[in-house]
Amino acid sequence: MEIERQFLVEKLPVLPDAYEELQQGYVSLEPEIRIRGIGGSQFVLTVKRGAGLVREEWETNISMQEYENLAARLYPGTKMIEKRRYHIELKDGYTAEMHVHGGHLAGFNYVEVEFPTVEEAEAFVPPDWFGREVTEDARFSYGILAHEDGMETVCRLMSN
Image (cartoon, rainbow, N blue to C red; front, top):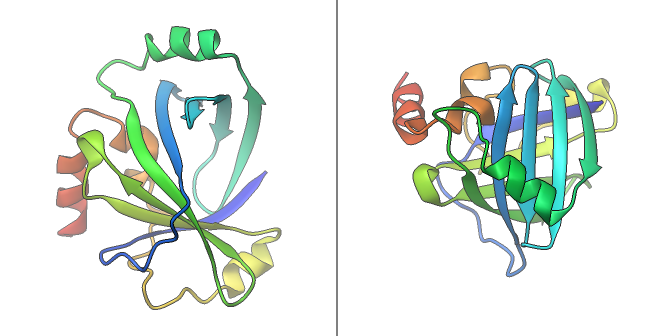
């Protein structure tokens, strides 16, 4: 089970020097089956169900060969998402995962915070640098943004 809140970020905070290079792609959108390469040395297959604050999530490590085989078979009309993930410690003891995108989503910045309980998630007060909350807005899911026109979708949604 995954409990997290997600926010758009218009102005980046000071970022730490350390980050992870990630590539993620979608083999299926329903159920959501995602592959992720982390730093070119770790590969993960994830299945997610549901939307919003609480989602079912199952992850397993896969080999580089399995990752490459699945990467060659992404869901039609989608692209691999390229991003840097920064871990930022917040004053209340939580960790924000800041995602700064490259590739077809260059210019899109997104932050998420995971919680152990729904109550803690609901009580969380985001820092000032967090922008519009999109936790319950499925239009900002990575499955949607992985489409080739992902940045056009972001621009259209942000103007609403």
